[in-house]
Image 1: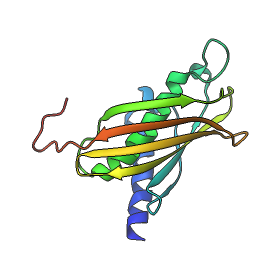
Image 2 (image 1 turned 180 degrees about the horizontal axis):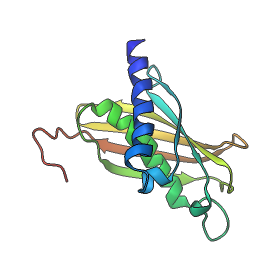
Image 3 (image 1 turned 90 degrees about the horizontal axis):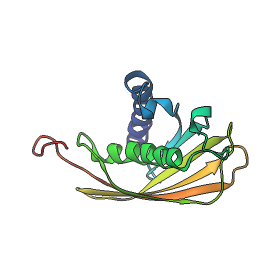
Length: 153
């Protein structure tokens, strides 16, 4: 129960940090909402309202923005498991299944599948908030870097 509470607090902190410290960069522009988390499942779920600036040239949510939402979501979960370490993205792969309408909500559930000392592997599923249908999946790898012994970047 203590670990679940710690995860809930980290989810809340991460979303608040995005609004307070990253409001004018990509993460803040996404207007993310933390929906839920489960320490038992090693998962976090986020909601991203599909905004006008995210529209592609044919009127749907841009695939690059979908990838960014996955990276944000899985990045938060990887940082939870990395603790005080820095956890940059090593790789991310997105599979697009169906388009997401403007005005919808892009719902991302990410699950940590391996949380080693150095490498954190995750998978993600994204759903339409309106229809509940699966719209994309992702897989990513993050590296936990101890910044007290290694230089960042």
